[in-house]
Image 1 (tube, one colour):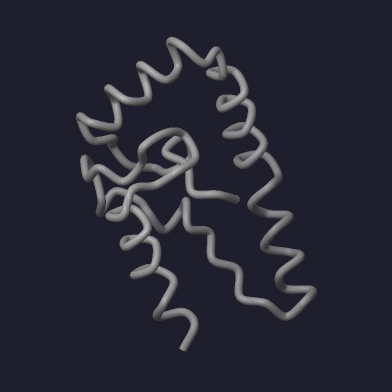
Image 2 (cartoon, helix red, strand yellow):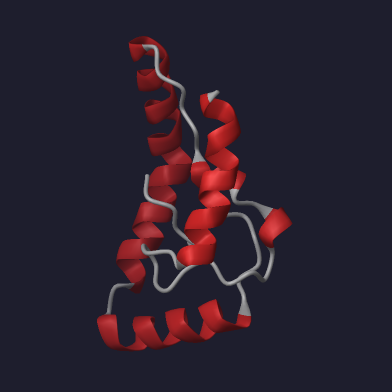
Length: 99
């Protein structure tokens, strides 16, 4: 699943809070993102991990890995897209698992 601040167990930066609040006010997509979070928690992450095991792939749940260590760092520009710092943090988490 695409990295999402909705799913990551970390505190959002001031910038993220403001951007996401404004985005929600004009987009009307708040319930969609809430549903994505529920699906992720209820079944998506477990299904992806199981599928990766069956296919012999390494599953990296980047939402789980971008956790409290990055509290209040500005990582996202909206509910789906990251800024450079967010992608850098994601790459730092994934790279050691690929060696």
